[in-house]
Image (cartoon, each protein chain N blue to C red):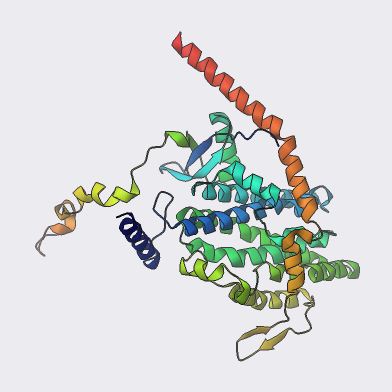
Length: 319
Length: 96
């Protein structure tokens, strides 16, 4: 009996997916679908939160008040994006504390791109232009992802993300139109960030174990390689406009496929950073853990204060 | 690690402009209602998305059961006569 019910529930679920009807929090869903979403959404949230760190360290050193205000605003947006996403993940039955514990223990991953250092101001331009550009490429299709709360969170995220990319491009443009030393800074930052950005789309399709099922469930809409190709095709003309050289000797226009051929990502480096051995992995997690632990007394005090006030109010009403 | 104790979860509703309903936009954690409203402002209205915010502690929201949606909404299913298109209006009759 139970298996029959289970089967009809699964059929109803598959039918919704086929008809592009969004799945909502209390709807029945296969356990693996729930797990996949919790993993993907929480990792996405962690990426937003950890993503504040490489840029945050430039807020005090931004070259003008305008740049400082813009960067502050962008970093605040990343915090907001993390919060939209955590709340979407919580609708699947996981808790905020659990997700944060998994980030701190290393069980949950976040985008490896944030394990690279921001050495100069030009890196802030490169991050906005390249990293946020790649994030947009990844995120826009997620507006149509099959899980309702995730899709709705992505609508908000994508609306805000395009300012991030434009401010980065503007920083790059100022540097490229500046003195030779500034142009050089821009090129060096571009060299540093180009390959790690291409890694953001994840492993090659053939080596991405989750892609096939995620595509069937319409959690993902395009494969890693499809998105990587689109990104290269979009960015090369922008780099040319800036007068920057793409650090890839194999980059070549391919008329037949109406896109660029490009060199292979250094997958050894990719897996090495994923496994925790990138230049900043330890530093990033230590910073998060420290902030969390040092903030514990504030969270406890706020809760104690709220409870005390609620008790006082209840006592007053009882009088 | 410190004691694991989460702030309660709140659902956030925002009126985007005068004349429109408050609409659910998401949720957040806060110690009390006042903090929930301030956090909602920072998280959900950074670009003037709202002129008014409601917060409700999530545990106070009661919902219909999606598994019973078919039967639950069934009473409205066969009452097509509740829609104006059910009625035939002669072509000569204007403005109805």
